[in-house]
Length: 154
Image (tube, rainbow, N blue to C red; front, side):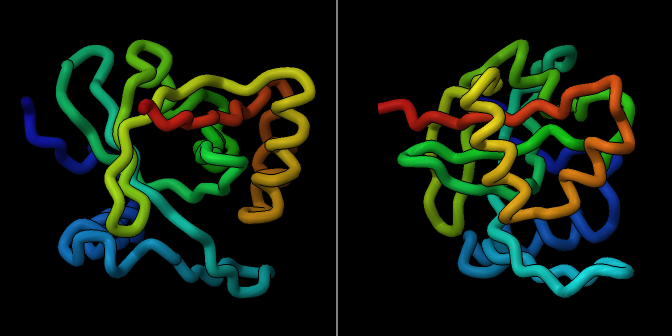
């Protein structure tokens, strides 16, 4: 199996955060504290998502903020309010069986995009753990930002 590598073109803060997470085996980096301009400091749970590239077939690691709903993990394909979906989301559409690392736990999961009432409920949850999602959605009124459910595979 191919060794996973950091996704290309990540901002420096994401690279630094992921490297800390990986080098500590998840003992550090699970809770990420961030201060954005004009916002209070936030401490947000983060996981590492490993996908298979839809074009390259290579394994890529992406750091993402998350929430929980039951036994499932919730992530949001916001790309900071960009007009296009993030690469990791396109990868999971092509291959939904992925792996996540949550703190020191590595878990195989199947990704799916929430819709309808489930999406509405999970969108509220996502805005609780990361309030900027609402602003990101306002930036892209023609793109519904996907809410992704990661269901553990037994």
